[in-house]
Amino acid sequence: MSKFNKVSKQSNVTTNHEGAKAYKNSPELELYSLVATSLLSDKFYESADSQIQRLKGLVEKCDPIFVAKLAKYARNDLNLRSVPVMLTVELSKLHNGDDLIRRMTNSIVKRTDEITEILSYWKTSSGKDKLSILPKQLQKGLQDSFYKFDEYQFGKYAGNRKDINMQDAIRWVHPKAKDEKQNELFNKISKNELDTPYTWETELTKAGKENKSKTQVWEELIDSGKLPYMALIRNLRNIIEAPVSRNHIIKVASLIEDEKSVLKSRMFPFRFYSAYQEVPSTLEGKVLKDSLEIALKHSAKNILLNENESHLIVTDVSGSMTNKVSEKSKITYREVGYVLSSLLFSRARFVDVGIFGTEYELINNLNKNSGVFSTIEKIHKAGTRLGWSTNGHLIIKNALERKQSYDNIFIFTDLEIYKSGVYGGLNLEGYWKKYQSEVNPNAKLYLFNLAGYGTTPVKIQDNCFMFAGWSEKVFNLINEIKKDGREVVNYINSIEL
Image 1 (spheres, helix red, strand yellow):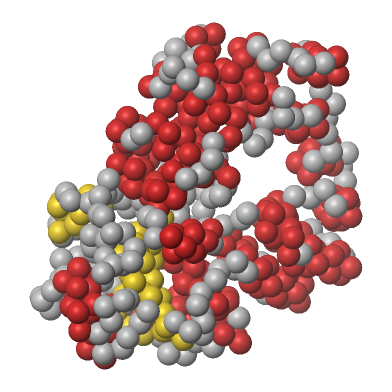
Image 2 (tube, helix red, strand yellow; image 1 turned 30 degrees about the vertical axis):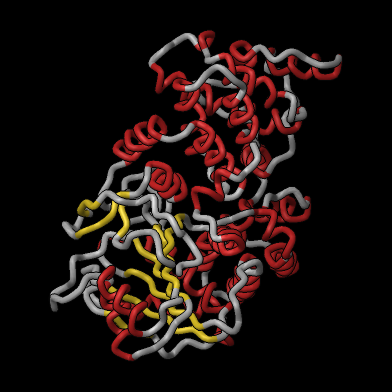
């Protein structure tokens, strides 16, 4: 008997964007995969507007409590910002009668500018100019959020030139001060008299007015200890080109390598790879690239794989996987797959790594001692020669022909798998059933949905699982589910709100 997913919630047979047989996810599972992979940019098969409309429709179909908990999971575990805002506002239009929206709102607001983001999205999506008619529980949740921040945190985003600013928020949300100190703070916000805080953005702006050199500005920011980790990673090229002193490069390297800072930053692993690509190969750049390698390994620290089990890790390199994860990013879905595959490879003892497109290939020249970035580059290079089709069935067909028993098979893909490829025969699901029957009945198939489309090529049951997202946190989710056999939707429903 199957230990995991004993009861399947999938029954609707459909076709995917490639015309192949697929299974439509339950509304909850579809919403989860869309939320976990959405930066609200155009995708290969779906525009940003289409994603928004699909999200709205799914919110209507799902249980309100699940939607609220999913928003909290997306904000707190996946470190997403825009999508939790959308979930909160859209649910507030549909649900009332209790304090669910209030608790949901308070759970996703981690920065003061998210208060104005919620108000702005409400105004835009509702088509109502007057924010005085906010849903009551949404207003109360925003009031609660005001109590969480001090003057520095409010001042940090007070200067943002947006359609709705913090003065608007004070007027429309009406938070009631709990003491005199808070009353003074709210008055300063209302009058736009907040002290300008020391942040890297304000220092760069001020330096421009004071005609400071870029070298001086960046060295002062590095010495201040107030340069946020993500801002540091995103500005490595600027720091090198300033240029800063050799001592400051060493200090930056030390900051990058700090394990606590890495884990606290909650950065997607592909952000480290993106930074690695941007850093020039100068003497200083090589020092920082070595530090990024250490940081990326820190980010994988909590990936726990059974060292006695065997693993096959495969990335989709088809045409649709060349799409960028967002308009502002240079990273593609296939590169996200390369990074996550390489992190898994670095943590596994018995492991094969493969890639598939029109053809399928195992990569045999990987060495854990060479480092994670080296692994990524080797997978990347191999991925350029396999063609643009999506013949995912070849993964299991190859393992079946070799009679190679794997305990776990991980596939990083957008799940838009072809029918059966140019050679005919069984599809991915057919080969998976045959593999379970003839090679390893206990093998588990993990499908990692990197694009958030609403179908899967294999029914999610009988040791087949679907996860979504670009964070190493998804591997923690696997471990949580393994503990008691829960599926993703049930795990999210277990989150306290």
